[in-house]
Image 1 (cartoon, helix red, strand yellow):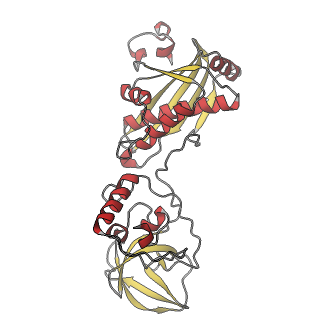
Image 2 (image 1 turned 180 degrees about the vertical axis):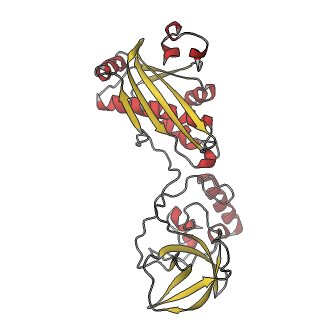
Image 3 (image 1 turned 90 degrees about the vertical axis):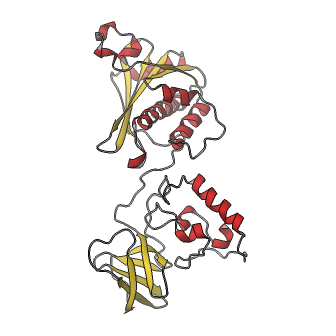
Length: 337
């Protein structure tokens, strides 16, 4: 199917917005509106069963919901303009098609109101040049003179959710509470006395999550390292559980980073949080994390980070907000953290 469609990367089968799988890719139709960067061998059209498998693979691999992929593409670099066929000019709301040495100009069929999600444009006239500020666009051909604008390069367009790789720079900020904290914590990790706790927070109004963790040396609540991060993901993916998972991932990645930095090759560390579900996930062992599983990106990253860690991880549940019931001095080190 891929050879027949003459596509190579995910960007070849999604719209210009980086989120939506094109109708032509799902229906098995060659998209003639985009340039081809390779010479493909001749491939006859696959049978219906092959297209069913093709659509199923796309939906599972990229977690497609209502036509949108979960991990939207990142920055669309506005390069390779010499080969691109379609451009959108937002100033005059015109669409331009490269046609040899000239340009075909398309105007909106309905010029009233907002641009909308997929506005239709109709061929109007030829143009001698492409206006400055025009941006690469993707279209769907309706007929010889009418196309639908499906997406275009936007100023500041960037990734909303990136697949998380082990060792990626997920950390936002870390700091030590005392000048001697770093030495004390590294020694505690070497001697298997280190403890680390994390917690996540979900802001429903902002549709975002954050998390933080505290790394401590045994019963010492003075020499600490505090880390913070912003939970990755699109707005509709965020919840309190995802925030908890991001805090766990940040904790493991940070400890792995310290072990690599200070050449710590063995030992144990104990991790605590108030989320039973997160602890259960960390203790599970999967060779394959299914993409239809909610928050699969974080779960897979956590499993990989624990697997490659030079330390043995022990997990425990810590009741949250214990200082609401007891005085701080009455709490054990887990409650204080």
